[in-house]
Length: 420
Image 1 (cartoon, rainbow, N blue to C red):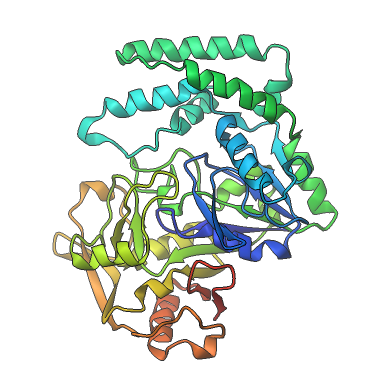
Image 2: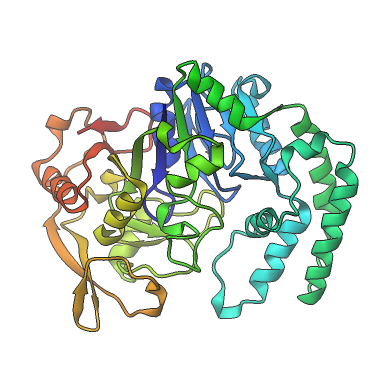
C-alpha cells in the first residue's frame, strides 16, 4: 500500500522533517510532483540540509528513493544535491531511482520563466524562476524531453529543436538571455544523471508494492497551490493534492491508504496571491522572526498570519486526509493570545467555503481567540506534558476540520515531535 505525506497550506509546512521522521517505517519514499522550487529542510547529524528534488528518505540507508514521472527534474540541481548527500556517506547510485517518464528542465525553460514573469508587471505570480512552469507547459504540449530520452542517440537533436522553439518564444517577449554557462552546467549534469538508476517507474513501484513493500509518497508545495484547486492563478504548475500521487507515480487509487496532511500551527505564504489571515503588524513580524520564516529555496521572507481553518478544512476534504501533523507549534509558545479563522466575511456575509476566485474578493477573516499557553514546549516528549491550553487549541482544530491532529512538531530536530 501507499501512504501519502503532503502539505495542506501554501507549502513550507515542514514536510521534509515529517517524511524523514516516518521514513524508517517505509521501504520506498517517492516524490510524485513538483520541481526544484521545493525546499524540504532536514537536520542530519545536527547539520541543516535542504533537499529540492531528492526524496526526503535519502538519509536512511535501507530506504529506496524514487523520483516519479510527475516531477520536472533539473539535472543541475540534482547533481548538486547528490554531491551534498554523498558527503554524508550516502551512495545515491545505490538507493536513488528516477522514472524514465520524468520530464527534464532544460536551460531555456529557466530563461522562458524569467521572460514570462518579467512581462507580468504587477500581475507577477511570484515564480521562483526555476523553469518549472515552462517545463510543465512542454509536458502538456507534448514537446518535453524526458529522463529516458537522455539515453537515446537522438537526445542532442531533440534538445536543439526544443531550444529553437523556446528562443522563438523569447523573441516574442523581446527577451534575450545568455544561457551558455547554463548549458555547460546542464550537459555536465546530464552525463551524471545518465549514471544513475533510470527505471520504468510505474512497473518499478508496482512491483515493489506487490512484494509487500511499504511506500511513502512525498508531496511538494501545498494543497492551496494546486493547479486546479489552489488560489489560481497564484499557484504552482502541478497537482499537489493526493490525486496527483496516482498520475505522478503510476499507482492505482485503490493502493492509497493513509493520507497524512501537514500544517503549521499558523499560516505562511511565499510570493503573491490571496492570504485572508495575513498579518501586516508586529504580530506577523514576530511570527516571521520566531519561526525563521524565510524560503528554504529562495530566501524570500514569508508572509505570516493566523491559522486559516476554512482553507485547512477544504484541503482535508479534497485530499481525503486521514490524519494531520501540526508543525512549528513551539513558535506560538510566547504569544499571550492566538487566533484562528473560522469563516470568511464577504460583503457582510459569513461563508465557510473557499471561494472560486479568492483573489477577486475582499475577504475579512472571522477570528476566534484562544489564550496562549506561554510555556516552552520544545523539550516535551509525551502528549500528557503538553499544556492544557495547547490541547484546547488542538481539539478545536480537530473538531472544525473533522480530521484528527495526531502529531505535534515542537522544534526542528528529528526527535522534536509528540504523538498526541
